[in-house]
Image (cartoon, rainbow, N blue to C red; front, side, top):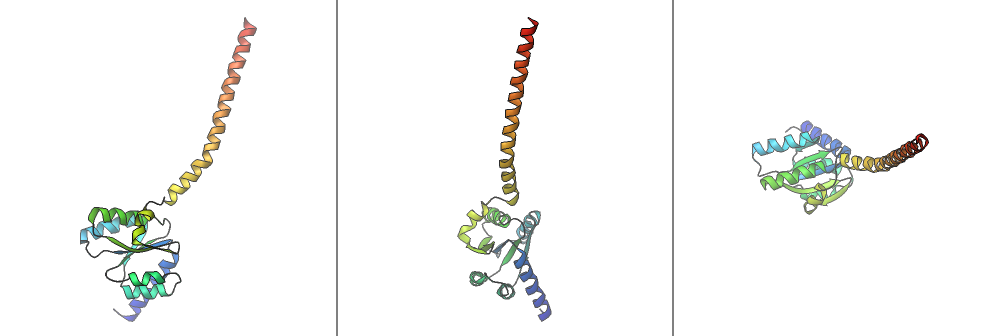
Length: 173
């Protein structure tokens, strides 16, 4: 590989790492080509970018940024990097599902919002709600009082109609 190609890869990894809300480093060494293809497809569906990068190039890229010191010692053996720019839990969910399904994909380390997590935290990272779920929960919470008010107004309106009907029946009688 030419020096210019290496520099381009280093720049690309550094740029993606700077933009990412989460990065997951995984050992994919025992995956078959079909499993690797399926993994990439799952990542694409969730808007997660996935690259296999030489460890030395990844290390050089991460050295340009702060907060990745704990990642360097995990960059051994085959390493795939999953970058998430929107939902920090999406790669964790995919890696966990794939690991359970195949028993082959292993998380090495994860960086979420500049916090470094070891592989033992995969279950916790995968159980985090997605951004859409958080937004839906907030909107549901905001909507709940409004629907309660609407229910009260409807009940009062029904009672008022009942009272008016009762008064009209008494007048008619």
